[in-house]
Image 1: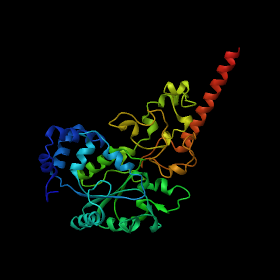
Image 2: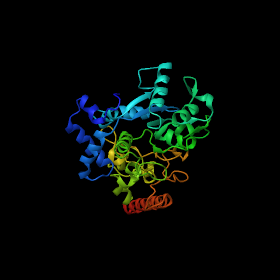
Image 3: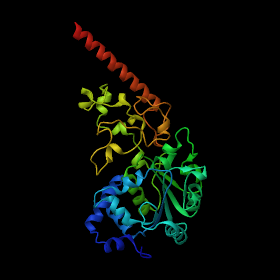
Length: 354
C-alpha cells in the first residue's frame, strides 16, 4: 500500500473506471438503504478515504467465511472491496508463512495503532492448548490484536456466537469474540457462512461514514439482519394458506409449497438471504428446495433438529426495533396452520370416500 494514498488514487492506478466505481457505489447505497441521490456523495467520500489496514484472524473455523467472500465472479463488489482495504494479515490468503507472517501482523499493528480494522472468523477456545498459531494461543492472539484495533468485525456464526465449536458439550470451551473483548466496538456478521455482501457492505459503510451502521440488539447491521427471512420469502403465501410440503419429493415440494413442516426456521431467522441470495443472486437455500436452518441465530446447533418443525426454546433474536410477531406467536400460528391443514386433508378424504 502506498503511504497516504486515497482509494480514488489507488483505483485509478488499477485501471478501475469511473463508471464501474459508480456502479459499485450505487449497489452499496442500495444495500445501506440510502436514497439514489446519495450515490454521488458516497462516491466522493470513498474516493477521498484512505485505505485502512485490515488484520484478519482465523481461529476455530472451517474457512467457509473466507471461501464465501472470495469465491465470486470478476469483476465483483467482493473484488473491489479488496482494493478498498489493505489486507495486511490473513494466514489463509497471504503468501508469507511462519515468522514472516507473524512479522507482518506485528508491523501492521504497530504502524496503524488505533486505526486498523480487526476481522475475526472462528470461535476462540478458552482452553489455550486446543489451538495455536505460531506457538501463540488463539485467546492471546485475539487479545493482543484487539488492543490496538479501531473496531472489530466478527465474521460468521462461530466468531459472533461460538457456532459449532461451542455446541454442547463444547470440549474446547469455545467462546465468541464479544465474550472476550469488551472494550472495542464489535459488529457481528453471523451466518454459516455469512452473505459476502453483508461483509463488504459493512466495510463500505465504515469507510464512507467513519462509523459502524445501526445495529440490532445482537450487534448485527439492521440493513442485513433487520427482517426475518420468512417475511421476504416467495413461499410465504403458501404458509399463509396452510399449504406445506410433507416430504422433500412430494407434490407440494414440486409445487414450491412452504417448507415449514420440514424444519424451515425462516420465521425465526433474521438475515437477507431471500433478498441478496447467493452466487451472484442466483438462489438461496429455500429457493433450492431446503428449509432455512437458522444459521445466523445464536446457538442454532443446540436448538433442536434441523428438520424439526419448531426449534426447541427461543432464538431470542430480532432487530432492536419492534417485531410484529414473537417467536411464540410464530410457533402458535404454525401449529394452527398445521392443524387446519390436517383438518382439510381429513375432510377431503371423507368427501372422497362418499
